[in-house]
Picture 1: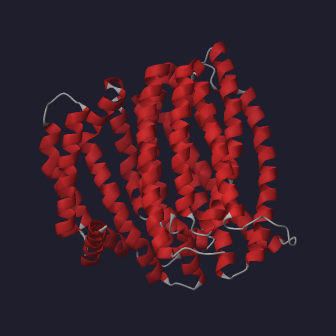
Picture 2: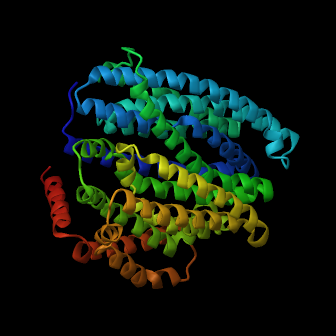
Picture 3: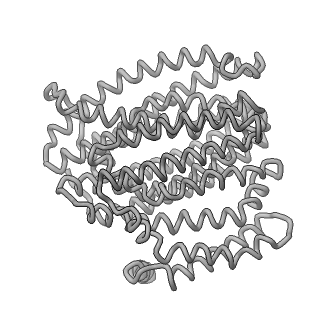
Length: 508
């Protein structure tokens, strides 16, 4: 099986991944505004409430893609293709059992939707049953899709997987618009997504078989091979619980304790947060196979630190600039996007984003934890923190209103991601956390702060919000930020890399 040049493949994969994020962001922003305008805040809020419940079931995906990448890469590193095929077969059997469990859980949840959301009318619950049934099919297809993607990405075929994902986003957006305009309502959204996920699975699975010549094949029953993978899958399931609960529990509780309009406003904030989280994650996801190879050759703490710092600096450039820019101009953006009535979402976003900055700029550590098969502790810690998030959300909403939901999430992020996990990295992996963050932030943090101060008068400039003024403000911010970064923030090697890329592009 031919392998691409890893350096070239990684750069191309990162480029295409950011293309995917850019496409997803544009489509999501357009579709959210379109859905609210076409369906109304109440109907869109109902869709988000059903979607939030469905996401809990997707927790059962057990980190299929990550597990496939981790173990198939390891077998490939040792040139054991037969063992990789055998592992893939065992995983396929596990997935078959998993889909049966998901179907059973889904039927029970669907039957009890009326009990979960007692404030909904009989007509809304009837619609919810239909929408949820389609979502259940979508969840099963998503798990199969992640299985196929895991095989491709284990062989560094990120570019193909992400390219297909871009096609899924674009076609799904077009179908959603057609179906909604065709008077299908929120059912049209779910049907469109289900169709494109199915074709995504076919495209990637056919690629695995026809191009990579990889087929899941039973060679022998090997429980010693599958046992460590089950531990990782359990850890990933706990992490999925944390991730989905933290992103969905607020909408679920708001749907119970508040109004559908509150759910819609929170969903606007959640959409921005999801897009933000995807920016640094796009960098770290590409490094998973390399992390496995790094650990396989016995890398020490200093090598791991360097492995995290290099992408971490790039991640901080993006996330730091995003948060600063959103703090300055986010109110204008939300006003232009979904209207003045949802502008409180600006505060929701910042309350959650700021505590989430620290773990995002070091999230390449997740690749190391996967490679070392040490994901379980992180999952257990975050699972405990999820309970805190739920408890605080329920307590705060009666006192401070719907803003209590993001406050609870922000506090849980600080305790779990920022404090406990960094203590774990220091104690267990022997990493110098203070030095690592100092290397990541060196030069970049001052640029973020100075740009914010310089652009503060632009934020205070009282003028009616419009896309033209917003783009103008953002452009000024980006020019000042980029200039300061190049002059003071970047290292000499980073500057050389940029000038080299520009030089190559100018010669084409």
